[in-house]
Length: 406
Image 1 (cartoon, rainbow, N blue to C red):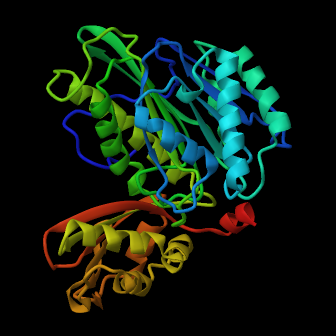
Image 2: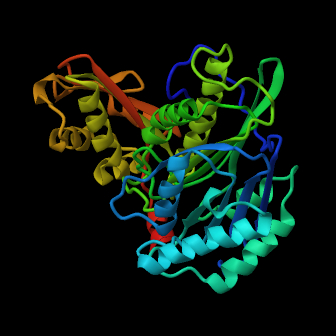
């Protein structure tokens, strides 16, 4: 996995899902999906006082589950999240919110928690009511299936168009005590988030100060999920939650604690690993492209320009076809809201300069084609207008994207 940002010492992300102390998980098939695949999941912390932080979609149209979570997150406390796939419970009005609250209440009753500390997530098709006749029995099954050692059923219960499960864990020491930070995630389409992703849940047995927990999650999301784009579409349901239950018994982590940099790096590394898995699993995609913009007037301009290129369907289809149609890149730069001066633009493919001062160079196009045939390559754009820099990971767009989404 290429680095999203440079860190002094990157934690080792284990390709397994370890449940931190005090957490249990479950996943079941409740009948929401006709395929028979798992379609509900539950994560529970058995430790009172568990802290929680979250980021959510900035889409003006928000799913009922997001509205419920955004109200609860103000307390900074949370002991569980119940998730269903196969139905987004979005654009369902007041009834949808009532159904989301009913999911939380039923889960709270089933596992013995206050309803206000149970969070809700949904993912799937937009516009249809939740099948509560399947959801409520599913919650009972989840509560009866909770495990402190096996989180894979929960991982599979949140998947939709994912080609495979997405998860990881990091082990570290805090105050001489072993600590685990783990993550499970889903996402392959509708990926162009803003302080969010599709669905992502992080858990740790470390004790963490509430404000510090929120700050480190926000920064990790900014440098991971907010640096990828599959199709330029933001979901109505995007949610990231981070639970910290303190079961490790350490002094609460916050800036100034010797282990704070290691903990923050662990959260960042897990989010970046999940972001990489999402873009690598982009619906119908064969390639991942890092779009770097440097020399912009400001960092904001660089970010706008990079996203304009990464989200352009004309550019994405040219990536699929292997032909380096630099005119489409120039076009996407030009119509972005960033300041661009045509005769100052340079464009290089893995270091091979194709455009200099807005004009095609004499480089053999076969060299650029060879770069573009790779599963991973970098397009570096220099605007020569300032010091602003940013990057985004995008992917090509193949016929399979249509097949998945019709």
